[in-house]
Length: 200
Image (cartoon, rainbow, N blue to C red; front, side, top):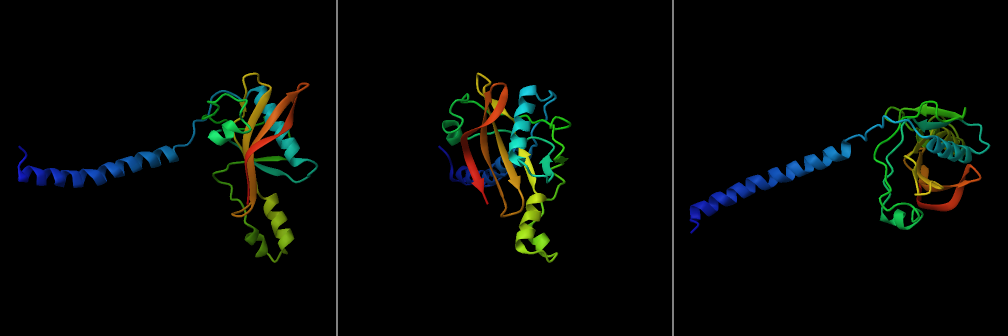
């Protein structure tokens, strides 16, 4: 039979342990969130490089402005809606946790590789303070924006490829989403399919 003294002691222990365990779980969760992704020791494949270059060429179009691009990819972590949407022809476990660093793989002289941890994305307000009009300030912020691209994933046949991109040009300026590419006659072409699009 448990005595009153033992019950009081047990309650005191529980009161002490509960916050301690909660703190431990929170510490582990924060550590998992802040742990940087592992950088792959393997180089990008020819297929991956071709998809990145196809995306950047199409994104830039005829623009002469140099595009700031993060020099490291992001992990590709699609959710269930993505897998049932534009990624429905991809393996259900499609994801890429390891990342790659870009060097000279992007064959485009309008690309400026930057360290995303050190690059400061400008705000429209920064240019407004220089007495620029609104349209000029917005365009200047876009020109100073940062493009980030995820790892490229493929379907089983390697005739479909997908990547998640994000272009940031300020707190309320940017867009992104998952885009699909199809291999046609030896070239990667943008598909009409996409998902997870956002714009601010």
